[in-house]
Length: 94
Image 1 (cartoon, rainbow, N blue to C red):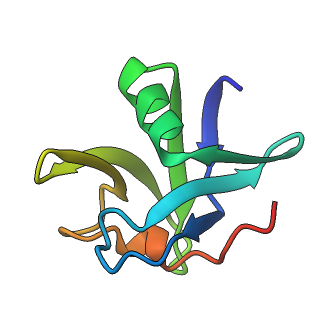
Image 2 (cartoon, helix red, strand yellow; image 1 turned 90 degrees about the vertical axis):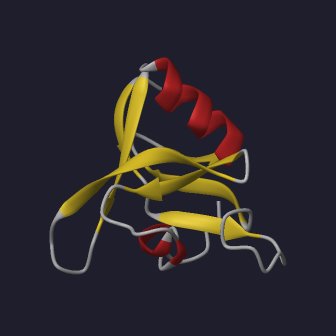
């Protein structure tokens, strides 16, 4: 994988903390893909790849790495404190 990718689904665990509950994100390129959040954070921070999310309004927003209580997590630039755009995506079946 190299370049820009659109996140279309997520997987969550049972944690109630919205900053820690997303464990994986996924999408479709030439094949279906699914990555651990830690891998996506590393890829974004290295500058090798970028990710975005399509919103119901029809626009696309960039996914960024944020930090809360010294823990890194993913959210979109358009989100406030919580990763709402990602949390609104369906569960990945990949």
